Amino acid sequence: MPIYGEGLVARLEREFVEDCAVVCAPEAWELVRHDFPGVPRAVVVPKSMEMGIIESQLKAIKQPASWIGIGGGTACDAAKLGAWMTGGRLVLIPSVVSVDAAFTSAVGVRVDHHVRYVGNAHPDRLLVDFDLLRRSPARLNLAGVGDILSIFTALPDWKLGADFAGHAHDAAIAEESAGLLKSLLDGVEDIRALNDAGLKLISDLYVAEVELCDRQGSSRPEEGSEHYFAYCLESLTHKSYIHGELIAMAVVLTGLHQGQDVSGIVAFLDRAGVNWRPADVGVTRPEMLATLTALADFLKVEMQLPYGIFHHKPLDAGTAGLLLDHFFAATVSGD
Image (cartoon, rainbow, N blue to C red):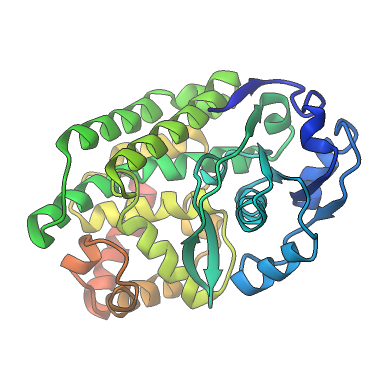
């Protein structure tokens, strides 16, 4: 469970800092280095989350007693990978709440630009420092809504998988997950303000959705075709995106393909101040079209991704173009 507060880095126990490797982005280390209560054996800036590259980089550290991840998803996943490989202790200190990497035990890596989850590493300490979060770019914290907002499209996908692919479905867990989405939408004012309540809400919802996924034994309560679109896009473009913004965009697009009314989601994103429109995310319409038309073949290769709307209603260039017309109209009108 997270420890919430301010000034938490300076109070980190000696046992974790005596022989440690800090895994971080340079910006995150700059925010905390004057408060860090020790001298790390190494400060590692991940070059890439491609498995071969990051594994080699971490192995060069020669088994520190503790791995301390400070930053966003890349830093936290890389620190988890180090702890999993060496058996060392693990401390995670998210400097932004843009993704749920600090709250999950699985390690997200890339293999030939495809997302893969390996290992299982639980932190000895998970420190959510409100002051540190507020010193990071607001845009990144606001993006944290994406991995909760995905419940909006994940739950219809889950039901679709039960109805058409025979997948196990738990109505009680689905209802609890829907409650997390409602809490997110209801908290829009605190999220927009990025006050303690808003930052804690995002963190608490991460904890709750991970617990539901653990109970279910899969990511179905939180992840669906909106993530598949993002994975396919990343595999085609080889670009890096702010994950939560990309997922928020994909939720609107996927929700439209599911036949859902997305106006409430659009209104929430705009009210919260999240960057989710393609131009802000860094995605072009031709890239979206290429992704939508590539998804059918992508899903035949990525067979570990459970049944969802893009399995059920694959798109060709014509139908994908019509969906994008609808999507771009929704980005303007909110309908």
